[in-house]
Image (cartoon, rainbow, N blue to C red; front, side, top):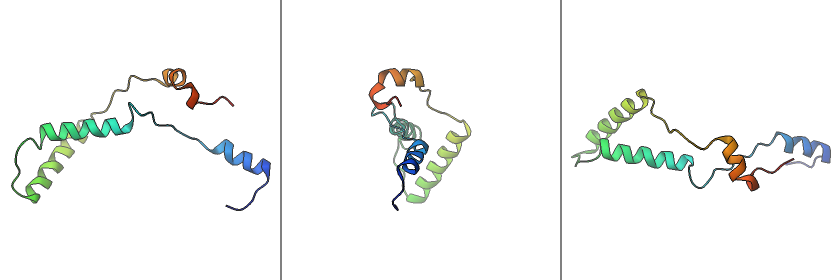
Length: 91
């Protein structure tokens, strides 16, 4: 990045938005939940060949996406700002 003046650098910093992902309750937990559901609902038996596997997983994925299941996070932004105060510096 080329050199810039301190005021210009400050403008860049003001536009920068950093989102810290908590270790617990993160998107990785949501992925782990979905993989668990996939395993229990679709992959809970022996599948003889890769094409059958692909069709089964695709059908499960289509049904799951159509049902619009999501994760109901109970951790609000206000709670996060209190609990993770050190991650939300005050400017």
